[in-house]
Length: 336
Ligand code: ATP
Ligand code: MG
Image (tube, rainbow, N blue to C red; front, side):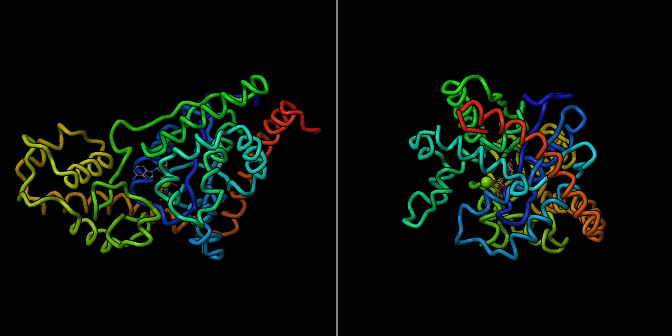
């Protein structure tokens, strides 16, 4: 095991599109708020972005990886307290991914919701899309992670990571740490503004304007998207009845960004027209994005420093990853 100074947190975001407010609330803000409590490893998952190859545009992928890296920092991830890196620059992920693919029953992979949603019905679906959870398990166990902060859609992936790690340990001896998840009690599943019954997602945002609030969207685009968000035909927020999913979603976003809860929302918004609620949400979202975007402009304005941070993070990650991979190689009987 790699020596730890504190309990260790590992997580990542796929470079499959532009980051949205759901990624910020569900995952990034949770990491940012807990940096002192843990030893942190956060990465941009570019290998995972290749699992739907039809959607890959190489030049765009390359710049998107740097954008996400800079956005992590702009959202409050501190490269001094967190090892920030790019997955493909630590080749140990891919090698351990193979070792774990070999111990993962296909039947476990076939039942994954994400596989079913993104490709099970396509004849051309790549094997990478099916095997993705084994690579994700490698991402996590490579650093002996104790805790993985995620949004609620990733719980099934953390569960399969535990199963794969247990199976590896059962076959080859106790080598891998079994991780727990960390999840927000509210805000772990921000819904699409245009369809509040489906999770806000990067891939859908590429195809549907008005679906997501991008972290780099202009204040005008944010206002338009929120003012057009689907609610229901009632005129005002009534906390005594079941709230429409779209209204609940707006309140969850408001509460997450203001640190409030449902009781404070009820005091502020009971009886308010939907227009009033939406304007309040526009204001808190635009305030938050203005901070993030100002910091983002600073970071991307200094490319040399950004490259230095990318290099240092990957080097540090490699040192740990190399130790763990060596243990796994020994356990499985590979020569060195
Ligand atoms: P994709 O559509 O490509 O799968 P995504 O938006 O689902 O993109 P991921 O890279 O799969 O983003 O996930 C990154 C992190 O953000 C994960 O921890 C995930 O649980 C979290 N997350 C993603 N979408 C949401 C959401 N709508 N609400 C809260 N958390 C989310
Ligand atoms: Mg996803």
